[in-house]
Amino acid sequence: MEAGDDSGMKRLVDVFTSSILLGAIALGIMLVLVLSLSSRFESPKEKVFGCGNISMEKGGDLSKTLSLGNAAHGKELFDDNCASCHNIHKVMVGPALKGILERRKMNWIIRWVRNPAQMVASKDPYAMKLAKEYESAGIMTGFGALKKKDIEDIMAYVGSY
Ligand code: HEC
Image (tube, rainbow, N blue to C red; front, side, top):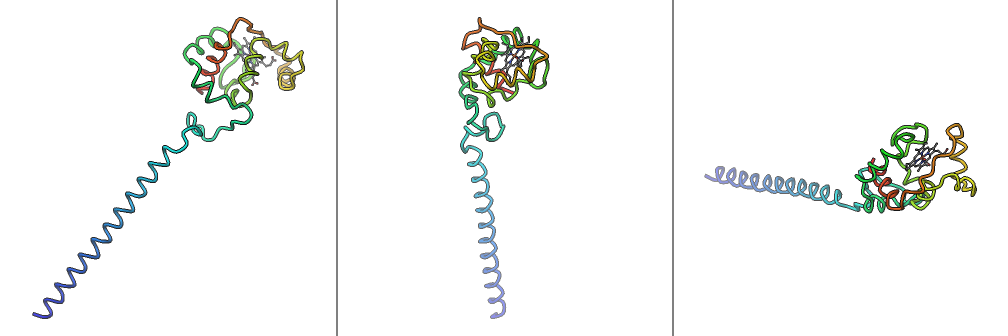
């Protein structure tokens, strides 16, 4: 009788400790889940299009342009006016435009697209360097008829890559 009681007690303790263990494991799994979920929603501004941290120092207009611009309209304008010399990903007559919003500010891009020759003439250092690099292509055609909004739309399209 006594021995039986003892082992019965032991089994009870075993069940008790193993259920505590299981509970702890379940709690651990839940914690990991909650943590990984919450880190996914952290600081969405830093993760524009899944590119990781984008430096906002040189250009800094990336997210603004992407949210303001109409990329579908931009694609039309790009195909009509720019695609003969530019590709997003590869160098053609002119440079590949991918990452341009990180290289240059929107203001600069607008001035450049509307009148590149004047930018070079006014000795803008970046424009001069660019013109030298692409000397054989000549200076890019200016698009004085494009409005600020049009160029922002083109950049929204370009920036979507
Ligand atoms: C006739 C060819 C041609 C056309 C058309 C053209 N570009 Fe260019 N683009 C160039 C060349 C060449 C350069 C390099 C600088 C130079 O030599 O003028 C350039 C440079 C640029 C740059 C600077 C790129 C960088 O990496 O710094 C931007 C931005 C740009 N073009 C935007 C546009 C946009 C937007 C359009 C359409 C509205 C356009 N270009 C149409 C030839 C062209």
